[in-house]
Image 1 (spheres, rainbow, N blue to C red):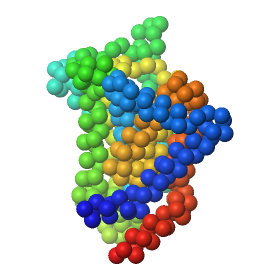
Image 2 (image 1 turned 30 degrees about the vertical axis):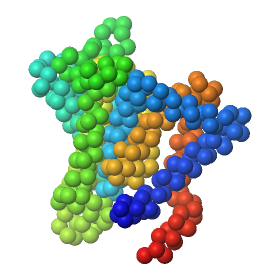
Image 3 (image 1 turned 90 degrees about the horizontal axis):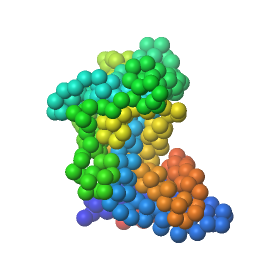
Image 4 (image 1 turned 180 degrees about the horizontal axis):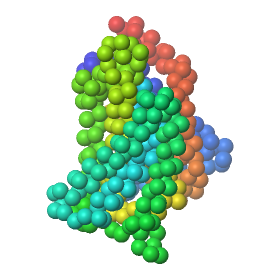
Amino acid sequence: MNRVIAVFTKESFLVPVIAILFGLLTGAIVMLVGGFNPIAAYTALVQKVFGNAYNIGETIRQITPLIFTGLAVAFAFRTGLFNIGAEGQFIMGMVAATVVGVSIELPAIIHAPLAVLAGAVVGGLWGSVAGYLKAKRGVNEVITSIMMNWIALYLANWIMNAFFVPKGQQRSEMIHDSASISLTLLSQMFDNARLHWGTMIALLAAVFFYIIMWKTKTGYELRAVGFNPHASEYAGMNVSRNVVKAMFISGLFAGIGGACEILGVFHYQAILTSQPGYGFDGIAVALIGGNTPVGVVLAAILFGMLTFGGAGIQFSAGVPVELISVVIASVIFFVAAHGIVKIFLKPILKKKEGGK
């Protein structure tokens, strides 16, 4: 029991929790200033998320890609890198899954895993480009990964238009049924919400994150290189190889997310008029989750609920959906400005220290 209490009174746990509460409070104040009822708005949000089986299923569907991109960004953070390119890696994962899903026909037991694997590998390779430029040429990964996002967007559209989009259409042909990872029976239980195996894969990816980062020699080297590359090189570690490896694994997470979005949700790839946004949202998810796999999963749940529930605020309470962005931005602000949060935590932490 004491261990449970210790976990829930840890500063690393309390800071994001208090930040979330402050974010919700800030959103409520903005609503009041705008002449809206915050209680009605938040009630509408909860009702939208949990109101019926379909909405619950769609909320889970919304959460899934955020777990993948959150893990991608968090993994890079843990290795001393800032991967803003999860968006591009997500898109390239979509492309790879579409290519495999449409172009070939295999038994389902082979086809679906192969399509997911293709998305993972292509996403990883796309991320490793920024890693290679960082390791070999000293180019800041923030700049290259941002540019790679736009390259991915337009390259994806060119590939789709050139090879997979029928004339006069704005989307590719449907993937073969054997490549689908949709959970048909479970979806029917949730009133045909678009549930798929990707959610389970995302949770397994979080476990993989933990194991490789904290239970393997590879993870130790990745963290050491991120903490101090010069000392790591002196200790005999290959710094360049570990930088590329870190970005590959980071991109792998985002690539799987993109693949699952195609194979489990849409079953085709549309011509993108803008970036999907999951990669950028993943930065916020990683930050709120403290760059830990469990934290990322919990932050993705919060983020997904706020995003999907925003429609309920707009239609049921008449509150502009943009105010959800205010809430999310406020949460991120308070997590980043943890010094402000710690001011309010001082009494709790002092009480905890006094009890020892």
